[in-house]
Length: 385
Image (tube, rainbow, N blue to C red; front, side, top):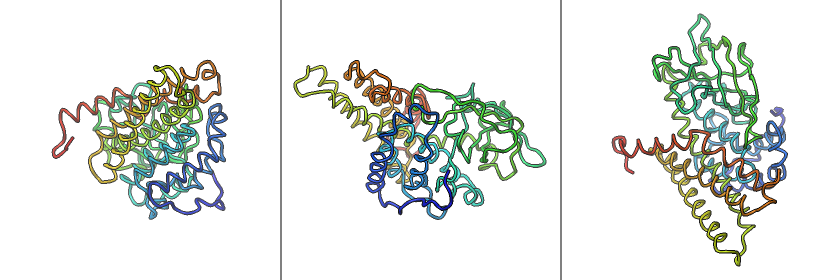
């Protein structure tokens, strides 16, 4: 992605506000004017990825010991919100890279694996991807069918992964497979590997309604051979690693949805005047309330995670509220914009398409409701709601 001579960042920001301001400047300077171009592309322009690396965004949450920028969940959420307010596809690429690739390696990897992968992820030399979903296993992650078997040289994987973000350009991919589907979650293990290994291929790039600039692909594993040290965490712990990553990832995706909701609200406000009909002003007020509720939910989930407290419930609440707010506000904004809003390339039209993806990615809204209900009905010991 970059040459070794290119600087990674001007220097680490300190604190959430500093990271937010850095992201806001970058979004205004380098993203907003490219939003239409990115939306019509099959991936992010190289100059954008280089800018993300240069600003240090791809090293957020990775400790300096492993070549990263440090920074907590609140700082990461602030950056993702600002990026998404300018271009959601860019924010989602960063969220996947950080939350469900770098963080699982940091949390479950060995020091050898951390040293091998985290510094290059932090500098943007490598992009991260997370390959869990399959054609027949989306919301039910325990039903995956990609198989692995032990060999004299390590592990051999065979199967298909679907709807995998970042995979076409990734330099590190987290793979999940089972050695026996009848074992359910107990048979699933996690693996970390670079693409380019024999038997690993990108079968197709998938066109989408929204987030078009964010690469989404099908991956095929045909007797792909991985070395013994590709195993991430203990054997049989793959689903736990995946679900832990997804809980943290939902905070990041909720922040992305919040950024889209905010941009849609600002677009709506430009189309409503003080002397407009009551129903138009009511819609604006309702949108503001939805936006503020989502903002508070994202902040609470991020704060709990940073404090080391249980945050799964709050992450699902944030993801559910922010996703629904993005869709509702973008939909109202499209209607208020009128005929000009539905034209291809219009801000309202693009925001509506991007917003509609968020109730699906990183766990559907129905899955978030199940997580919330299960937590409320059977809270873990010591959990206060």
